Length: 168
Ligand code: FES
Ligand code: FES
Image (cartoon, rainbow, N blue to C red; front, side, top):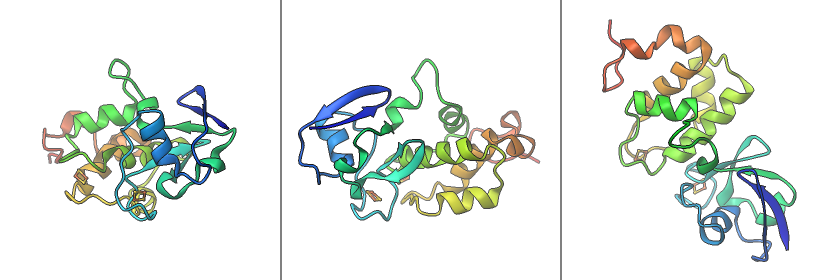
């Protein structure tokens, strides 16, 4: 039996200890916001927080998270009380198909938690491993920068159009 915290609640599973955390969360605990993309740690679609750090969960055995604190996109905010990044995602109309988006947001949330004053270079470096087949990279970066305290000056949401482009 493996025990860990999932979005603040203690959970237990008797799944095979080598089962990737992604499948335990999706199939056993029915939280399907985290997605399966490559299954090889290369795309970021499966990103969750493990003790506050962004981690690829498609290659992380559930046995590795015994006693640890897991946060998924479902635990980041609620429809009534969005995480600032989720609000920024709405503001900037970031998603296209949406498949990669929970991984993008979880990576960005961990980044902002560790470094609220992010620069564009910080965002580029932290998000480099999160792939988006729809090519939403420009809007993803604008949304993150709008939440980071440095970015507010550059990307004031009141000066952006619905398409997320900064107006002159
Ligand atoms: S599904 Fe985990 S990194 Fe691609
Ligand atoms: S929004 Fe479609 S893959 Fe990123």
